[in-house]
Amino acid sequence: QVQLVESGGGEVAVGGSLTLSCTATGNSELRTMGWFRQAPGNERELVAITHSSGNTNYQQSVKGRFTISRDNAKNIVYLQMNRLKLEDTAVYYCIADSRNRIGTKYDYWGQGTQVIVSA
Image (cartoon, one colour):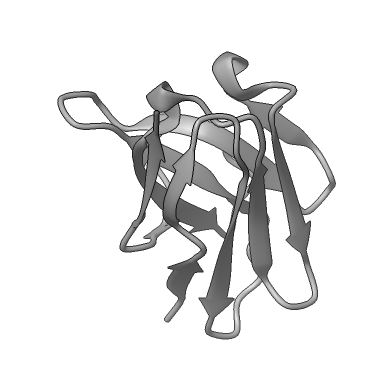
């Protein structure tokens, strides 16, 4: 059974940086790992995805500001967030899947970590 444990959320001023991390426990190959987010009143949306092959995909609004990376051996995925904007405020969810996937359905979801960007 895979569990995803997120850390690194918090409050930061506009223009600041935060790094989220997510560790997957359980002995499983996870080909896809990534991050979604959900702001109040909005639907959950993909932020960034990475596959064990090295492929990455980003939401357009975070390209150039966010970087996703992973440690395949340890099943850890990171999200480095720079030049944060007010609209990046959301609960960020880690996702993982044993298959190469991109979309909205994944095998495993974390509990979420709050990111607040303040003026």
